[in-house]
Amino acid sequence: MRTRCPPAVGPGVRGGFTVPEQPESLAAAQQEGAAETELAQKVEAVLDEIRPAIQMDGGDVQLVEVTEDGVVRLTLVGACVGCPMSMLTLQAGISRILRQRIPEITDVEAV
Image (tube, rainbow, N blue to C red; front, side, top):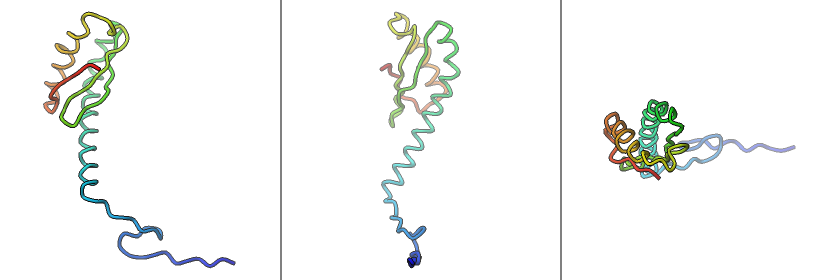
């Protein structure tokens, strides 16, 4: 017959295991990550509005990343690859619209 040890009780203890407190820098990093995720979601929402026009010509755009300093990195795919107009589409179309709708965006780059 086994005897069961009583669970530890007190602050920072859950289910018998001691849970270390998060350092302030980790909590700040998590908040920063949440802000980046929110920014990426805004960018993705705007790209979802732009996509149908790009897809009509056989291309598409994919979000690669949004950096912490507001740089959006995109990949143009499909018919956009090798198209001489793709940089014009990126700068005059996608970049302009993203910057108008999301002021936090500082630059848009193709990768």
